[in-house]
Length: 351
Image 1 (cartoon, rainbow, N blue to C red):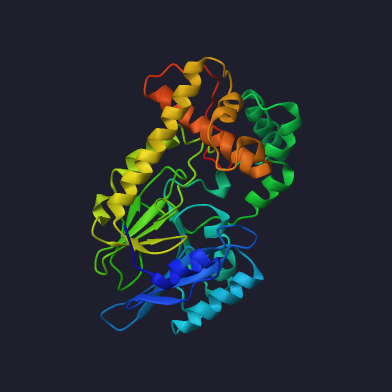
Image 2: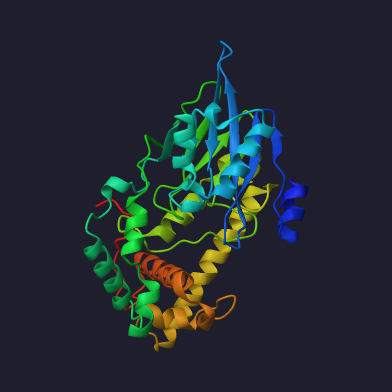
């Protein structure tokens, strides 16, 4: 792997914000603050197209976490590129997480632009409409996974979570695998890469030799792949299969949604695949010891960067859901895991 954005790399190491940059003519990188999170920022990308008649259209990819600070930074970045929010034609979101989708509603209100997600990403109109049922079923899922009673409140969603989810407006478009972005003057193709979420997408810009990978491939961090969405039966299998199709961007510069740009996509893909399979082998080793009888008990025996006991709240939830995804994957590969793992929770999902 070769870092291609030295200023971004230095900013990442120094824990500061990187600059706005023109990656190619008409392609801009704008870091938007991810407020209160160690990731610090989401890299939004502006793609400027112009048709044969000279009409300019603009796609903005992953507008970032919604905050007043983020809005000021985003609009300042657009100004550096010679644009305003009203210049935006379409808002493309690589996946349905708030550090990617969050600013979309504010940007749409200021621009009138459509918002698009991958065709298989869960949409708000399909979410459960009963907050009480939402809370009960989510809590029940973690109880089935063996979570002790004293931890259930902190790992399961509450009614305010349901309210936050259902407050998000539905996108106007969904993008199919292989489809070109509907923006004049651009030849950017959608690549469906389920795993991190059911409908995660990457974008391939062959004309500029660029691949925008969202959270699917990051230069340093391993994306979180967990058993969350009820319509995502085997997310880890999907993730590994999605890594297998990344050869389309083998020689391209990688524009991830976090950290920094780089080349050497297939080297990084190999690292991610090896890391993921090693984690599954670690789960197998725990199962073979014969002491773990639940998702909770398996999770406790796995290696976590700061130790299992340091995981609390949402981070503990994610760790348990990640462990569950490995158990489901192993079962799908013919391994008798001997542990109750159902198909996810009533988090955003197609029913």
